[in-house]
Image (cartoon, rainbow, N blue to C red; front, top):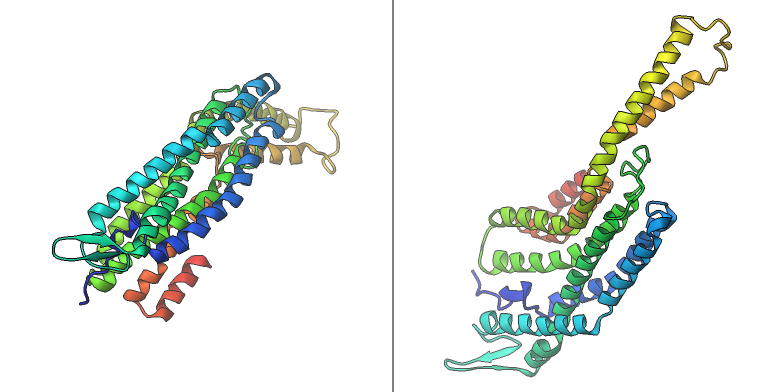
Length: 332
């Protein structure tokens, strides 16, 4: 068993490989997530979910969210927190043994030039980007909460099975980039302990499961805001379409089964049967309405984004051919 890697603290205090792997992903998120969130916000109006009487309130909510997103005070607070977290993590976790960023003697510890760069630039920058995305996720949550308080227009028969709010969940799945970026760090911490401390992979399975549940829950949390209105729309839709179906099927039965309509049209070419089938399909769509405005694939994609960086850990307990077979079974 080798000596412990000095980077055990990289979940909070990043080492070089962690910084290089996560930073591009966090910057990529700026280009991918930003436009998706903007499109989703615009879709509230273009799709008719937000009706005309709430346009002014909607515009005010958008302006307020953008002001908070671009707030200099918020950026300064996030930067201050980033330095605080980095310094605290370093002094508590990063000075135990000599490494490339610190030289330790029996009585003292001093930073190398690389250590000063890490502590002054790299670690705070990474923490800043992470914290800023948490802030933006909170702003998105706040914006959705304001929209939910409007008199939004939902349709129980909408084919997205979310009353017309499916575009919100579609935007939410792109947050998987952030989950992937943070999972790289989690994987690095586990890998260090597996390789250098000899801790078996099975020991981390409960922790990985808890991490995935919490991480995916945080990303999907904003969608819960609409659960109440979606369930209400579903309940009302089942009641209304159920009553309508009873009326229509009753008339259909009298006309075509009991033969009570003496002046009915010929059976061939009638649209009554197709209308009956369409009504049944509409009722089935309402029954399948989701409590969250998202496609089930969104949940699966976020879980995959969280677990994909963990795949290399399997090589510590399985031959690479078996790992590939396992991945093929999961993905196909």
